[in-house]
Image (cartoon, rainbow, N blue to C red):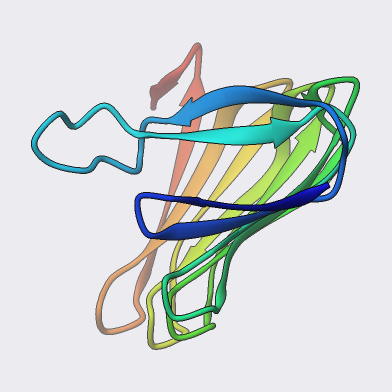
Length: 137
């Protein structure tokens, strides 16, 4: 158990065994390959912004993300996204918000596949999309 700092981001490890993984959405120039984190095989995974605010949080069991909701926050502590997981796949809602708290989009997944999407523009107007065979119809 311990605390880790990677590229200015802080992570809390609440398990004894860890594995390494890379989050591709966290590119750091010049390589743009993502940040590598130590991931607990069992327990709570948390990453903090350099200002100390929570950035990510979810749980692992046997080296895999557990069923339930993972969360991400902006550096100002406002909620950025929630993703529902089941059997290692997105299943249910993935919701994202702008930093001002307004919803950006809400995807619906079943067994890891997109089946619906609702997006909101800057004025709060929404548009809904339906997926069939992985494509918007």
